[in-house]
Image (cartoon, rainbow, N blue to C red; front, side, top):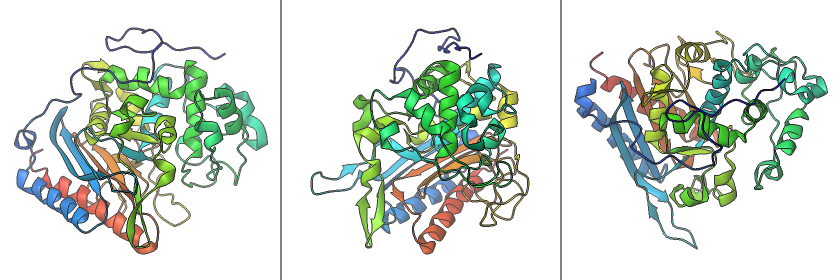
Amino acid sequence: MTATLPKTSTNGTASAAGHLTTTSGAAPLPHAAPESLGLDPARLDRLYRVIEGHIAGGHYPGAQVAIARHGKLAAFRTFGRARIATNSAPVVPATDDTLWLLYSQSKMVTAAAVWQLVDDGALSFADRISDHVPEFSRHGKREITVFQLLTHQGGFPSARPGPDVWGVEPRDRDLLRQTVCDFTLEWTPGSRIVYHPAAAHWVAAVLIETLTGLDYRQAIRERLLDPAGIRDVFLGVPASEQARCAHMCHVEDGRMAVNPESNSPRFYGAGIPGGGGFATAAGMAAFYQMLLAGGTLNGVRVLSPRVIQYATRNHTGDRTNPEGQPMNRGMTPAVRGYSPTMRGAGTIASPSTFGHGGAGSSYSWGDPESGLSFTYLSNARLDGDPATVDWHNRRLDQVSSLLHSALVEP
């Protein structure tokens, strides 16, 4: 039987039903000088110069980075433009309040809400999804476990609900549930590791709704983000905040162009669980500081240390994706591990560093060995031709490794 779980308030008690807004109050992390946190300011300046060079070279219009350690924000910098000029609107400079599209970084926030359900005893990673959503057993999916789902072994990587499911408000939760249950298998679950760009975390959203009785966006807001004081991370941007959203761009015919499918009020508000979140870099750095602190931020615990340790462990070993690249997957995050290279977290990262990227644009990670977290967001999707993908992969390694090299005191 499915139980409706209480929502956590900032004082740790059950709260009344809420809404899709942020919590007012102090910023989630206090500021501190980089030197006081063991970071070399001169080396951080190198990182900033690299990003300025990327923007000057036309690789992306704008960017934002945040660096945090031991519960304090060491640096928060914003660069360039949030929105480029179009026929109908002028340039909008980026500011510290700009919200950036996270793409698949959103998966980490959705996954953390599933980890909460494990903490609550409402769910186990070994459970079959059909134990909680019986209709999910359709089309041979009865035995798929939550573990397989979150480690990209579910067997339905190409499934993707359309705007008819996520782009209408108020959203029909039963339509989402039935759409997810009608996903069909492409290969035997558990036999391969293939990245599920959207499908797995739509299933996770249905699990969250089933076990909390709330819209998954509301559950994430009320049970995870608001209690920890993380205001500027959104799965579903309220209409009152949408003017803050940067336009995601892409290169088209050698020029920077706005990507229409991800720049609309409908998309901003949808909060697609595997690819439609928005945040500031400071908000995401705080989210990772919460994970590094064993699930506590601002004196409020939203996750247990043990569930985070389990969820951020490399559960896929040396298994590779179809392209032969090591997956190194936890319960959603990628883990640096011991492979010669690992996209995103930086080659010189500690083996336990975990994080997630966003399609051709961004990355966030946390390092349990040092307590350092980093978020790098930009607003151009660079994942087209092989040369562009190669440049994107190298720039992620470059910016992350520059930060690792700035850590000069343990």
